[in-house]
View 1 (cartoon, rainbow, N blue to C red):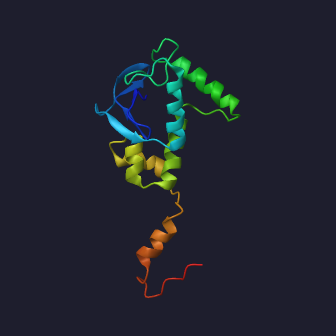
View 2: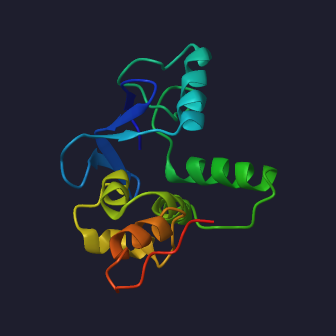
View 3: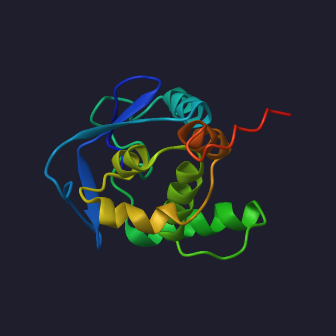
Length: 155
């Protein structure tokens, strides 16, 4: 759960919610992560709501500014999913989907930091064998001339 914002392009997380109980993150350390421009813009629009815009306020909260309980989050998610015409997915599957999308474009260490994993073995489930657009060029550079066969000319 994001509990405060530092700037337009990063977010800081200092607490988490598990099984409906709020507490510190698993590592007991705050962490910052980059935000995509669309996400940063959506969060910036929340400042227009007037209430609950202070540094320590919840980003997603009840009308009274309190933490949303599991059922409220589930109801909001289901309404948004249905309005978008998406198939039914468990809420946590969104994290896996986001991690997999990021893994298509970024290296393993970035994905690990983005998802907040302390061990690379946890991150590996998101990495699959998805090739990134730049991977072919990386391989071409790595193996250029290694086999004694000249590298192919780019098309």
